[in-house]
Length: 182
Image (cartoon, rainbow, N blue to C red; front, side):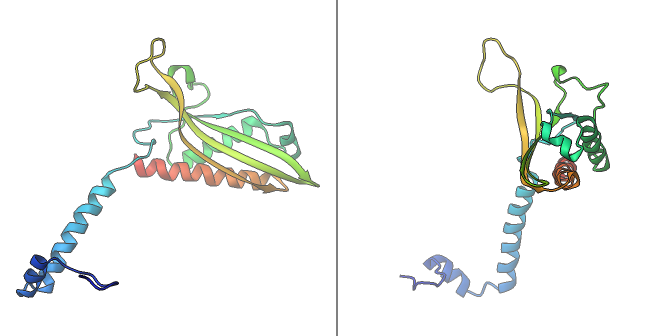
């Protein structure tokens, strides 16, 4: 029986330890075991950004309240494109982008609601949408557009720059994950 709070070994393991196996060998064995386990974990990734060739950028319509901050769809799209480019993410320009052909698109959805005075509650959704093939067999569809990566944030802002700062952080996080996976 093992007293509470102590590490107990089986009888065989205890005999092995008492037979003079040096602490250096035990340490080396443990390092090898943990090293193999950690290197195996490092090679496995669950990120959907693996092998992503490039993305288009689409702003999903701005609410009327965006006028209070002088936020414009084309300006936000250009802003996101510049951040992606700065972070090493290839961007499909508006002239070459075709979501119907299956080009992955990074969608920006911005919601602004006036709270009091100049303050607005805002939410930002950043989603990677691309065509995927379902595992189950479908009679009529071969591919379905689906969100494969998503981040959200919310806050209170008195000016547009606060909203853009939050959006910039989200897009930079996307870029960081993209670089790590590609």
